[in-house]
Image (cartoon, rainbow, N blue to C red; front, side):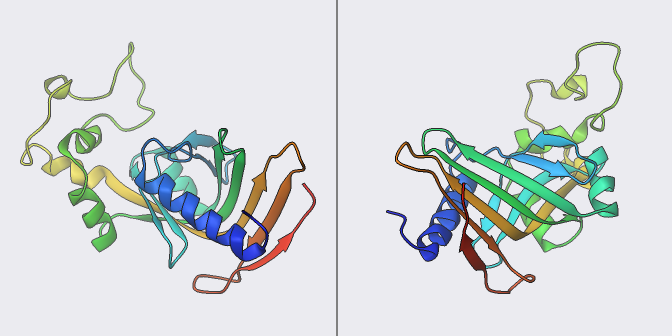
Length: 195
């Protein structure tokens, strides 16, 4: 039962942690909006409950990478229809290529997931429908050795959360709370707001 702002903050953390760890969670695939007002669905790979950061995987050649590097403002929208809960988040994005976070993420991915980074870069024009993968990897799991060139195209998008808007839909009356913090490591300050 949600009665206090502390309850809401715990609910936010629980939902984000579950979204990262349970591929069946409705919030596992949120909508990410970059500063160029472009939106896309991405798979949430991790939520750091201490740092309040979200981790996603991306191709370094994707247009969103240069957008984020130029202007790191990002919004994230999570929605769970059955739980009647929406989470809107804002934060600062950072592309991580060659550090332990990206290397661990690469190593913890399976070869089928890694093969996506062997193909054409996102947005490459094609004569017809294509996965962008080299023909020899269509439906085939590459070996570790075959994946060596793919690593250069893999990166991590980390989003440090700065603002959270929690909205619960209920026929007895909706509830909404907002939280913000001054920066990484700062405490969250919260307030109830009218839905």
